[in-house]
Length: 524
Image (cartoon, rainbow, N blue to C red; front, side, top):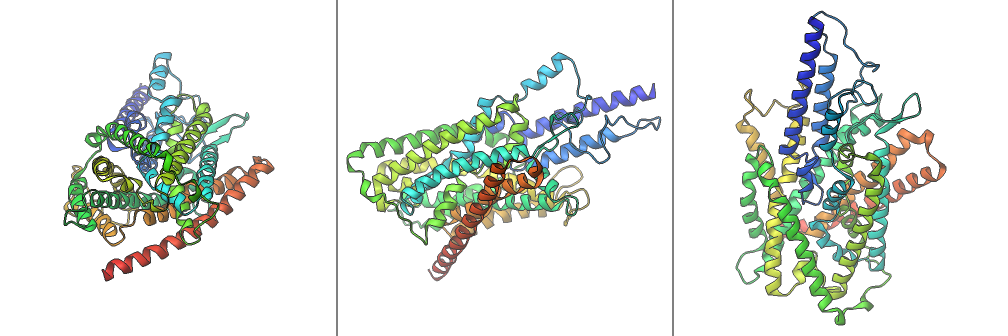
């Protein structure tokens, strides 16, 4: 009887944890289903902290699974080896085990909580076709036809690395079946560094996440100041002053406890941005008779083109949330097909948008293409874009705060600093101060380096290339090299080498440009 009561108690605890996790996911930005579908920011940033949330959840379920009952009996491990923590998202039991059984109604309810391939495709589309495509015409300015080729090349490579990253989540069991034994980018990174440095890979991925999230916040402040300054040039307000005004509106983000209220505006922002893209293309097509085809050449600006590479790569970054997305699909076997049609669509639309916009303004193309529009249209379009940027800012900010808090303040006694939350869950004053300091840091960066293309190129070269090119190919070779065909090894090595060269080159040139810009702003 005691064993039965303990078993029932564990079941109830697991169910409560499952419900709590799903509720937290919807509220705090994991957006595994509805929340992320409505997200509009370019990196689908609600998924960025999913690695930490998933890890905490799985570890909690693991502890529930290994607890002994009141009689002191040994728990049923379902054939798991000691230390195995690979559990399904619903917390029912280990992947590949027979413990995850239930009635047809229960399994059907679980399946309904997952997303279809079309919904997953919408998520990926939001990630790779967002606000930052406005910088692609500027990349064509410094690369000509080679810039167009890179838009296609980046789509092919990012699609391929997304697939091999998901392949790293699986291993074959004793009977040759593919079993999902990992759940996140961090899990893959840690598996590659085990057993000598079992946590090193996860730290590297988390650092890359934080850099990309914070840089995205900075980009939103920069683009807000840039758009407002160019929309109202007659007003005696500088771009830096507009950035300060925009940041003042963002200070309340430091008090956020969830993204539930913010996410309500996400779908509206997405539709508004789609309308803006259509308006820009319509205006460009209306001037088709003046298109400067002779300006598009096979040449590159040696100094600025590496920055363009980072811009293009940054516009495709989505790998960080793909493991979570694939794990929430009703039919994971459709993931490859979904990746192909979403990246083909992104490639076609980005290429057309960049080429048409560049043909319209040629050498006068600016870092943010809407700045080239006539005054009246530009003001309205830019106001909508600023509203979208300000509403998108809380997503990367909240994700960065989540990763920082869990890594440095809440790591089960291993954190470097004391917990920034009280026993009742309330945020401590110094924890709030750290959040405000992060908002101020994004403002200072936007003030001293108010260059959208430089910052976007730096982020793409540093974290974009690393997360989309270098790490997936390296992990694929490390975990599955025994089963790879020669052409797969060739592709992985080629992508790693090309990605490394582009990343280093773009990083160096972006840093040089940022140093020059910083010196100019200090002098100014």
